[in-house]
Image (cartoon, rainbow, N blue to C red; front, side):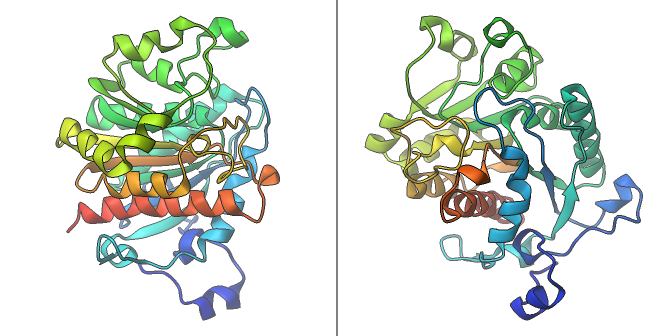
Length: 317
């Protein structure tokens, strides 16, 4: 299923991701996703934010700017949307004030995607939407590798905010629930002050590979990516891309910005360097459009999502 032409896209006035076909909502849930390799799902939910909210609007804005992204990938030398049958599958309709319902609905929707033989690509929303995706993936594949691109560990404990599930907890939850394979947690872009020395205790005890933003800058994205690919091997891998991994100079539209992050080029280079991994799912989260300027964050999110789709397309070569 290829991209629509610009003429067709402008004519009908709709804004699907990357000018892709839109799923037929008249079909029941599992049948809705049959025949597509990649199902793009928005999750307009930000009830798990602890600072500046607004990420619930990201799926709409990332859709809009993604129309500018052509299909041919010059580095990988392939036409992504010819190799990969991708469809915009709309949004998961989650109540904005019911986090448990959000988790159940996202879990069910992603499970339906997987039952149909498709791969979920999720556009949040805050980072709490990643946990139910990981739950569904682990039910299908067993514990997966997690490439977690973020400024933060996301291993907050319930005592910090009086809540066990929010955008600062998905990695801790996933580790505790056995959703990530031992030694297969890769956290890239970490930086900024910690609340205390114990902040890194959970991922370190789990054998995580930590790549602070400074190390990425000195070592290079290509080298770091190569090390990750070697350690993952042929294990199914989930990519979770928190846009705050990028320095706010390049991605101001996010709720928890931390200075000193990676550049846009480093993020895209890191993702391109993961060519060869077996992508079983991907998310891009924490984009807050009302804090953005000139769509720079939304554009970066669209291109990061495109790089994830390109990795899935490579696996079909």
